[in-house]
Length: 188
Image (cartoon, rainbow, N blue to C red; front, side, top):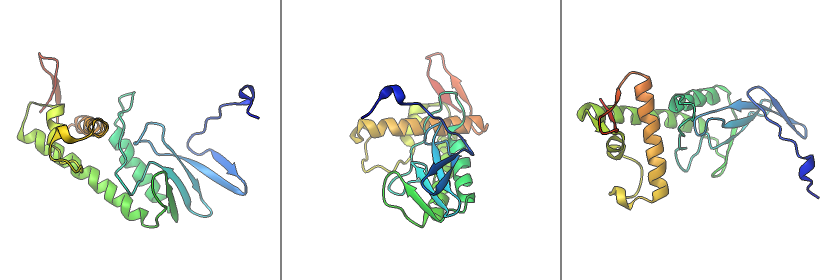
């Protein structure tokens, strides 16, 4: 019987180990999808339980970090960290395990870098656009031609990721953000 008085929260972080039967999983911090996203790596077998860090059915969304840190850079760094582990098998939270995850990691890295170039190009071609205007001009992989036809949840995810892209470009000095007299953030 469940006794809430006996439950203790246990927190783990990078380098900690979690024992499960005869296996000892090393905790790997892989921020990007969320600020505190963790993966579990079993070094002897090379198995990684990666959660939402690398997905095959979709590109994982990248969250805005509450502390203002560069979420996209954290994600790109996390991809490189996972690639360097030399995993033999990746288990993901959505979809079946696959062995071609190294190629997927490369694809995700290239995909995000292409989006950065696209967004920077949109800003260069239209200095003074608002964040929403830039984000709506990015070619998102959605089956709808009009913004209004995209589901509310998907639009929210697109806006979140678009802001992450813009924040990264600003953090890297590739574009600049100014708040206009109207209170809107504009990009140059």
